[in-house]
Figure 1 (cartoon, rainbow, N blue to C red):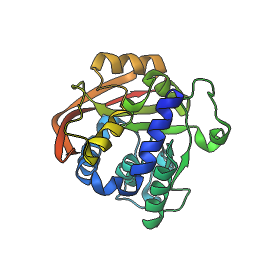
Figure 2 (figure 1 turned 45 degrees about the vertical axis):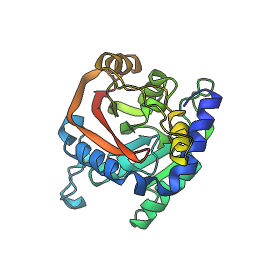
Figure 3 (figure 1 turned 180 degrees about the vertical axis):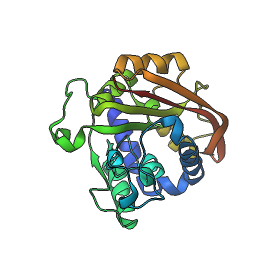
Figure 4 (figure 1 turned 135 degrees about the horizontal axis):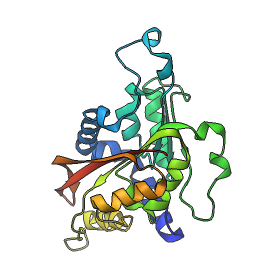
Length: 256
């Protein structure tokens, strides 16, 4: 995902915050889930209809596989699970993977329906990690990164590696922030300032412009039917005892 030092900072920070991540960021994550589900047609995958049982599903829709990269506790998977048949998460953080799998288990989902694995697809020197080389880690209908791209040292490489995991015509979906000013740590060394500083050390990019995202998709081989939806409203969440507001986008394109 990044150089060794930044990769380790990301791994350490998200290992530390995994236990209460869902609770602490509940408002933000629920806003994100709502925005995704409101844009299923925009994303453009041949979704399973969650209102129909298996007997009513078109054979062409028999399987819809999601790769949720930098999955965290599984926000993107939870948003899209009703419309897919399998969600596979990958994350650097062992504790985030554990949180993902615990929540899936608590929902009564079997591992072949929703399961996460620890791993890194973005190591420049390891294009095909052995632990992620089984056929089950390929031929996805959709590969998504939800609010994770700004942590990546090389977003273009990340997109390329994800597209390699898609079936022909599969969709790359990136959800992240539009350009914004960098946050600054405020205060006098309190615990909140320390936590904020640790969080900021994991951030590499302060949002992405439409031009940058288009270039990333084209370079990764996912430029077919590219579209980018800049959400009119913001998402918000806790930050240093106050809150933050960000404008986000959803970008999608199909593998050539």
